[in-house]
Amino acid sequence: FSPLLRELRSDDGNRQLMALTELSEQLSFSSEEALISFPMETFIPVLIGLLNNPGTGDEISGQVMLLSCRCLYNVVDILPPTARIIVAAGGLPVLCANLLNVEYIDVAELTVSIIEQIAE
Image 1: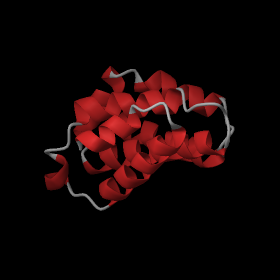
Image 2: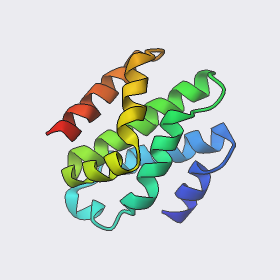
Image 3: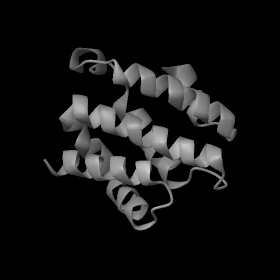
Image 4: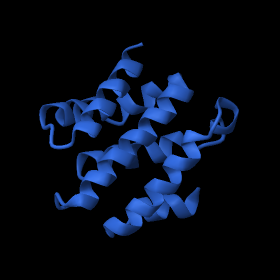
C-alpha cells in the first residue's frame, strides 16, 4: 500500500485521483479478513485530509471528495471498529462540515451513511 499512500499525499490532484480510484476499487472488493492487514491508522487520516481539503474546487476536487468518502465508507462498513480511528483522526467535524456545505450531493449522501455507521 506504500505506493498508494505516496500518491495520496501528492500535491497533484490527478495522481491523488488515480490512487483513490485504485484504493476505492480494492476496498470495495475486500473482506474483513483482507482489511486486517490494511494500515488503517495511516490511511484514514490521509483520506480525512483529502475530504477536508480536496483542492481548488474543480471537477477533480469533487471526485477526490467522493472517492475519499467511498473509501471511508467501505472501511467502516466492512470493519466497524475502524470508526474509532475516524473519530480520533478528527473525521466527525470534517464529515459534518461536508453536510453543511452541500456542493456535491453524492458526497453528502455518503457522508450521512458514514456518520450512521459511526453512530452504530
